[in-house]
Length: 113
Length: 113
Image (tube, rainbow over all chains, first blue to last red; front, side):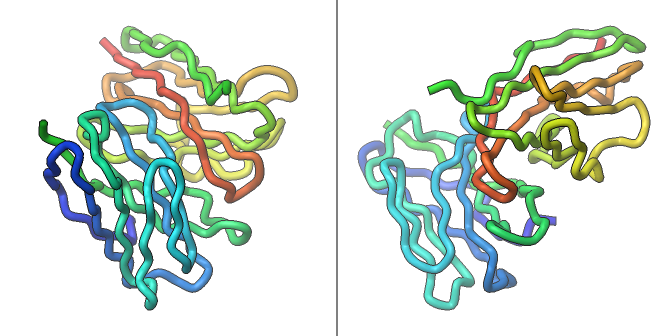
């Protein structure tokens, strides 16, 4: 079962920042937070992941709270092509056996013109 | 930048036929994961393979389904005697090391008539 909670849907205006929240209150100390997105039945696309510190790459920023019980994915300037289902996943990395990514229902982000 | 490749992208089979789905991992990746996405559902883990070894097939139905990743060539997911309930999108992912970030292919959409 997915160990994360996300809102089922969100809207965002084109050009604005999209902030997608995720609760993972039962996350353990060695679990990473991963974000993927799936654009209209295409294969899931990796976006970003992090453990404790905030992370940024060319696609997005990931803000993880100090207690690690929640995080926010930020798309700084959303475009129409960012319309997709966004999945927040907690997973072990570098150890253990939790290679099975558990995809919940995710958040359907709709970017409006 | 050759990503994960899957073929065919679309496959139509009649009940009772066999379906063979192929996955070529990213260059340098020797770990392959298969997931299934039923209509209107999230992705579910099926099997994890390394070259010539099945590491974990706990998510794969016990009957009719098999997977392999030979020393040479792509990973194959084989479904014998397909039934309508097998209609789904099948995605494979690959990683360089266990528990590294998984990168997904575009998927194979299987339709059973």
